[in-house]
Image 1 (cartoon, one colour):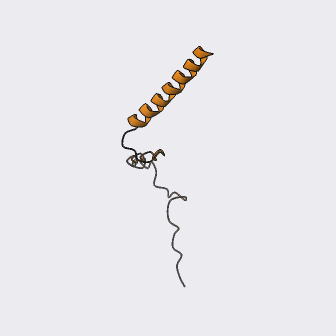
Image 2 (cartoon, helix red, strand yellow; image 1 turned 60 degrees about the vertical axis):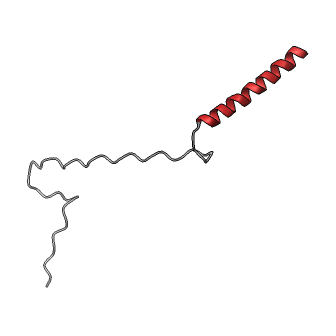
Image 3 (cartoon, one colour; image 1 turned 45 degrees about the vertical axis):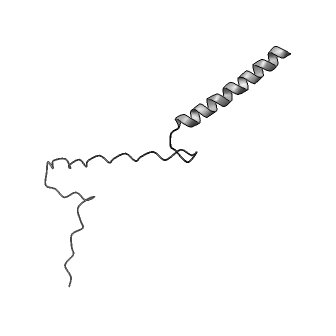
Length: 69
């Protein structure tokens, strides 16, 4: 039983040393929570494709104004 007790004590000591080392390697992070990742910079907008014909697009062109009487 003496060897088993030594093995358990050494395992616990190793776990404690590992936990302390990880905490020290974490740096100056004061909060134990992970911080949110930095948002990615948005990509530059791409120019619209060249128009092949001059027909109005019903989805993007404004409605024609109706004459008022």
